[in-house]
Length: 462
Ligand code: SAH
Ligand code: F3S
Image (cartoon, rainbow, N blue to C red; front, side):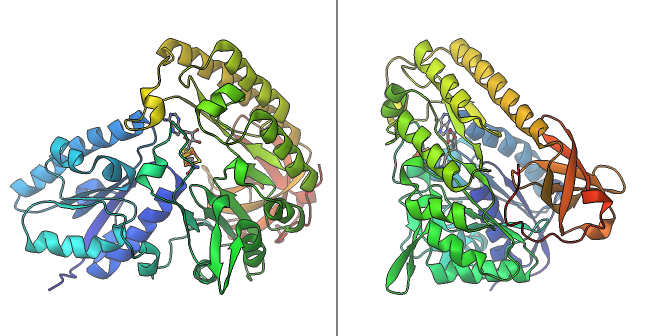
């Protein structure tokens, strides 16, 4: 028998946007069992931590959070109540039994590919004693079990189209935690996008660990990411498209052509390079060199001259010399990023790089990270300042910090603040950019305009 009395569910999400998407799906799967979301752990009948294993710090955070939640759980038990505590995501996948060893009070441990079995796991918990562990890579896909519409926050939605990665960069756990590359069929993706549009989404970000490896079944043929983007752009109500994260070696001509031809595709691209030195890229097993990357950037910019680029960088990869690191700085200067993420190399158990000799000392990593971030921050600030005087279409999707203010996203993912009436929320408004900070812009309606919906611009002018 399934108990459907009203209950409260708290989900804490760590890591990437794909985890955000998965957490929404878990909430959707548990809703029929009577679980409604709550922001407060103290109120919750079930707490799920959807975890990230990408760097050591991300994994350790989970264990300290589990300790804190266990205190609430034990207090609840003393009062005669109950709380179900679950660990989901990539820490669960990578560490499995180890989670139950370190945190024996956890009731469920399940990986990113098995959360569609959540209702079954919960039912089993009620029937059987002991924790539930499910870290298979099952044959049936979780995507076949997702009827619940995604939650849409502020008109911008995520849609997972691809999962897993077969590239095996030597530093990365994703191929082990998320499994082999898998693309959802085109019809399934389009149907979900239509549902999102019907629920009010105007912007969709297509997600995948290696999203441009997308090759979805489309009747008897296969469709790549460039083709999928063209199909998505035809959907009524979808004004803006983005995709993340892409792997440089697999950006094909069709995708570059989509940047040229599809105005809905925003002129912003996250294209991780990791390092600017060929020696390091090779040791990372990146399958692209420095020149290939720089040439790819040129080809993308030829297709879409107003393209803003973002990237991920790792400093202190085993064997990285001062000269290698200089090549990274040099590549950053050559490309000119609008924003970027940078990390110190963190050895992940079981990955080839963790066993490599010549690990770089922590203080060297710290110094390189600081130098790289100085340069990247400077580029980001310069780009933001170059936006002052331009007119940018901004999708207003959040209230601002003070009354009468709204916040939205520019095509380049910058937060833009504007004084505007509350009923402009959800519109794409042309804003004259009048101020810039390190992380955000300030705008006023174009020519003191009335916030008329600008829809999708054909092209932005520099
Ligand atoms: N394509 C993937 C990238 C995965 S991880 C995706 O977005 O889903 C995101 C970034 O974390 C990587 O691009 C890399 O820069 C960084 N990263 C991954 N493993 C790392 C490690 N062991 N140490 C430091 N940074 C790492
Ligand atoms: Fe990780 Fe490299 Fe794939 S960074 S997700 S193994 S492309």
